[in-house]
Length: 218
Ligand code: CMP
Image (cartoon, rainbow, N blue to C red; front, side, top):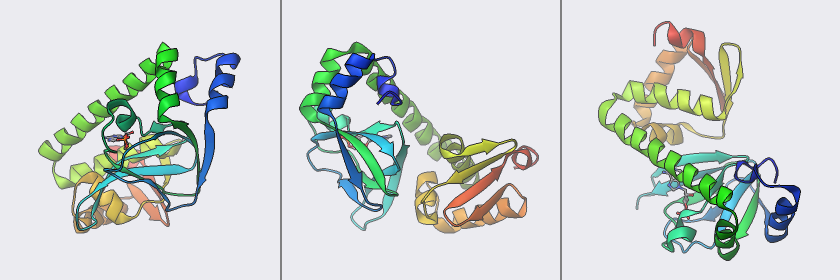
């Protein structure tokens, strides 16, 4: 629990209290933790693995809102406002979550202002990210959106070595194209072009971004 940003400022006794009210839950890759529009009753912190938060339309097309990894938390909105889940959550790989019931989550917010502030800061960040995404969808062309999305994924989920960032993510091209808000054929075209220029190299479930090449021409 000490590694969870939400609980950084707590002492051992406080962490002990939280450990008593949390449970650990394991999810196999592909498991749906909850679906959009269901009532929400649990707050989750990712212990290991990763989860995608997404909305879908009636034909089953998905729009990924976020990917969360170790230390990230989600599922707070419906517990705070009592409305249904605003998005669905699915494990991208075998994952372990720390789960808190709605009552215990709300008690935690009353009990410790540092935790409440951390949740508020996270909500503020997500609103800023969403505003930026709306801006990009409105003002950037498709190619720029793809490049920007790859850089965002690399910065958030990649491991950097010198001029390269390696990103291991169980995302397919459909999912990446919907994150960037472009058609899949546009994504494939831009990716091929970036590969030709040596900006990215793509392999199974991972891609590598070559920052030096990115600066010199894309
Ligand atoms: P909740 O509505 O309970 O369930 C879905 C969760 O997805 C939501 O709480 C948030 O934790 C998360 N979520 C919803 N919208 C976004 C967004 N735009 N960016 C990041 N996370 C989100």
